[in-house]
Length: 476
Image 1: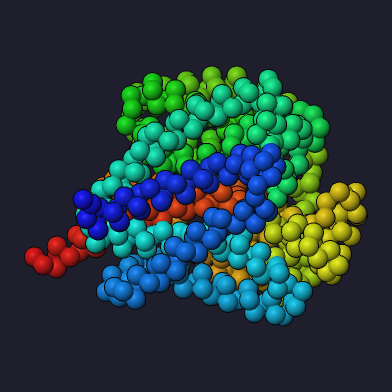
Image 2: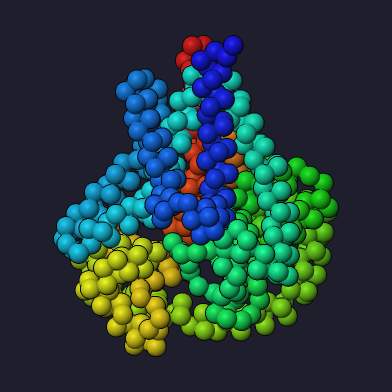
């Protein structure tokens, strides 16, 4: 007969696996059950937010149940700072929502896209910390799950994605059998029937790999976010030849998404990680130099042709940045209100197109010959937050993420495997923040919820391990 601890432990691990698998399979499952079988409503998209809110409520219960453990958890300066600043960010955005009465709906969208992933991180961190601190076996099982995820899930997802890509490249209509559209287009299809595949241009170009994600960009964000964890836990422990082979598979997977930001970010994070862990050896340095030189020579003609063929996309990045900076200058004090731009604005303007902010956006798009767009996406998450929340909100938002980057230092210091994982998690967040200069990876909920769930478990285990060591020192 299972005791209560074993039940709690088994339910926890099962729930985490179930949540992550559902996240990965959300798009194909929605396509099947909503569009093929017509069994579920649009509200089914909110299942993950509902589960996260339940975890958050459970955390509050645990805080009141064991205030001592809660106090130890919040003694960590980064946890305390991120928690307080996240609350301040929500309050500041709410104040601006009342200053801009038309932005109440925008506030809900702002929380959904710009705060909720922080709630995921903090909720999973505390839940993992609490359970791992109360039972050593739960700590071991959570850590073993992280190892299995890194060593088995991530490489298997890479291999499966190649088979998926071969399928949509040769016969995209196959996915119509489970509810996908068969169109090969470049168009965001949020809350609409998923498409089988996308091309690099609107109706032509290269087929992009999106795997089980809704968009190729989402897959690219996922790969760049998790590569540091995979590198630290797997690649750097392999023989050099195997490291290069596995790294090349990741590069190929990212290149097939045709995301310029993701490819550049992946190459940059690879250079930094290889420099940190391999380039201290002259033998490895020479091998890497030869390998990368050959790779650049082989890739350059293809990358140059592809990049120049996307001049329209390049131009739009500059136009959106230019117009956003003008809007920031026009509303220097209180911003334009939460949810008035970026990833949330297309929903805001679709639901309430009569709003003044939506009229302004339509004027901008008409000015630049882009009537087919109904929102102003600044293509820059930093400018988006600055435009919406003024300088105060922007500095709070930026401060939160800079604090989350602090554990990167653990990558090079002598410490436990958990510390290395925490450093790798922060490095993965840095990759997402780098891409936020030209895209909105932090607003892509499947990617951020998945990443923050894993990151929360890592953080919780680290704090539990640290508390145990501190207790032993105190006792001695």
